[in-house]
Length: 252
Image (cartoon, rainbow, N blue to C red; front, side, top):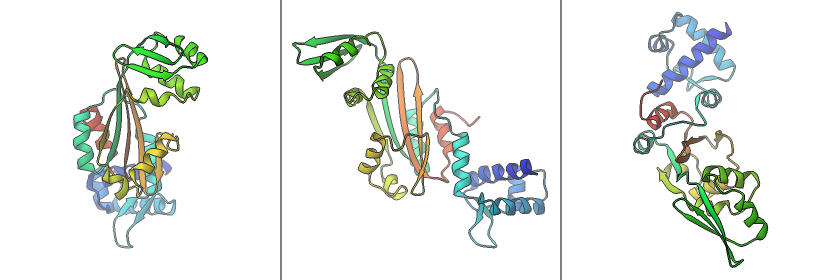
């Protein structure tokens, strides 16, 4: 019985994401090709409503998944990491789906050398760029031991040991923002406040749900490039379609 109810919930979610409107039991049966009668589906939908996983806009309307069901669904199906990341596709898809995107990218360069410049500055020489820090003997010795590591690993070390100079490494990033208006229209908070939350790690989980909006963090890392992205949209937005666009193909 439980498995049947869960199958109806999954069918309801996928069908709602596809049609973007409340679903009748007959429509759900046909769209999802469920092996149950419409009356049985109505009974399962009623069970889901009692458990807070489905809802109706009014008594005679069709059903839709509840916010609780959607958050749990996204927590289960959305990946925290992905191999491919098609920037061009994602720009178009975010505009189409009304999703805000904040994307950070950097070339994963090796730290070739660390120099002490007259006990005034530390120069971190990467393969393509340099980072200049105020001199501190302990910091210099620590950074000197990191030679041969890549920027991605060094940044993780800075995070682990809470080294304040991590913001200097962020200067090596390329930044892209898409659909900034969504932050206010959906998340109901100005851009500045949202980025402050990101910097303070208030949004450290892969999936967050705040103020009626889903906040989704995704990372893509290869040998030569790392991409970190944060997406914000209404919880009923089709993040499955978004993931498909990131990969540059269809959902599997």
